[in-house]
Length: 180
Image (cartoon, rainbow, N blue to C red):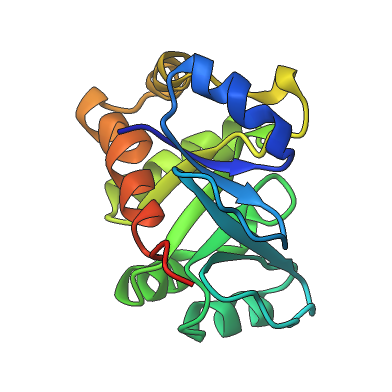
C-alpha cells in the first residue's frame, strides 16, 4: 500500500490517487473523515502549539537546540528536513533519532541533490527515512516510480529505496488510529 506522507493542499488527493497512492497524510488542522486520510501537523521553530489529537506530528527545527528538544519529545513522530536545516542532523543526533524511533522526512519540494545523498547515508545507518512531496501544486507531486528512480539515481540500492518509499511511509501512517 503506497502512502503519500505530505500533501499541503487536500484537493491534490485525487490527483495523487491517480498516480498510484492509496493513503495520504494531509497537512491540515481540520478533521478528516475520508477513508485513507490522516491528519498531519508540521511544527516549526519555536512554535510549540498543541497539536490536534489523532495527528501525526512533524517538527522542522531551525537550530540544534530545537532539534534536540524535538527528538526527546514523545509527541513528535518525526523530523522534517530540507535544504535549510539538513546540516543540523549530525552523527550524535542521528543516533538519538534512531534510539527514539523518530522518522526523518525529506521534503522533496525544497531539497537539493546534496540533501538526497545525505538522506541515503542516514538510511544506510539505520534511520527511518521517508521522502515526501509536500505538494501544494500538482507540479510538485511525485509519482512513486519517479521517486524510486530519482533516489536510485542518487546512488541508493533498490532494496533500501523500497523500504524508504513503501515500508516506512506505511509504518508512519499506521501510528495514529482512525478513532477520535
